[in-house]
Structures are given as structure tokens and as C-alpha cells.
Length: 149
Image 1 (cartoon, rainbow, N blue to C red):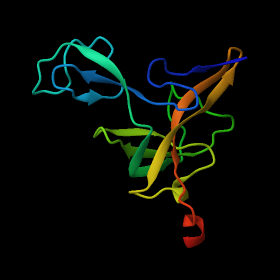
Image 2 (cartoon, rainbow, N blue to C red):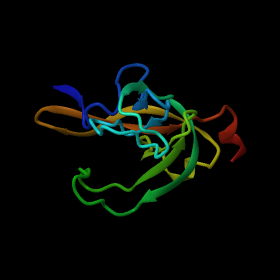
Image 3 (cartoon, rainbow, N blue to C red):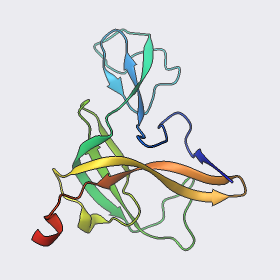
């Protein structure tokens, strides 16, 4: 069995996974998800038409969060039985806020606005072809923070 990204081109795998964004070569504005063949810059003040892939920061600050108590519609692939999960909007140093699931084993009780989160890659689902992976946000637990709660 092999492990493959559930969404091709949006993130790297390995020991130091990263989201893959697009940078306009004219104005240097960075976008996520990557701009695949859009032909124009998403920055309305720019007329740029050339782009390059760029790895985004692996760490950011939790901007907001919530939980998904209901099963999202397709193309979401639920676990059987459905398990609620947390979502976090994480602000990266590049100025982007990226929404994503929170890592397995963490929920809204483990999150707080302003806390640090890091990107991890985990299995989303498994089928006959193997594991299909996705990126998620993992809260960075500060030493001693658990004792303060």
C-alpha cells in the first residue's frame, strides 16, 4: 500500500511538509490554493500574468476556529462512523489565512486564538490504492501550558 496526497499539488510531504502557494512574479502577492493556469493575478491592482510555486510557512497563528458536528456533503469522504472534527483558520507570516482541519486527537478545547499551529500530514482515508493524505493544523503545545489550564 502506498500513501498519496488526496489533493495533488497543494502540499508537500515528508519530514517538513508545507503548503504550496503561488506567487505573482510582478507584484509578489502570494495565493493559496495554488493558481493553476488562471492567467491573471488575483490582486486586483496587478496586471501580472506570470506565476511561480512557493512553499508557504509551516507555522502560523490561530486566527479563528470551530468544530464540524455535522457531516459535510461530498466530495468530503467521512470516516465510518462519522466523527466530528475541529477546523482552524491559521494566519501565516505571508499574510494569508488558511482554513483546514485540525490534526487527529485535537479538538476545539485544545485551540485558542493567538496560539501557534504547525502543518502536519495525516491520513484522510484508506481505500484499495492505499492511504490518501491531507494536510492539517496541529496546535503547538507550550511546555507547562497543560498545567495552567
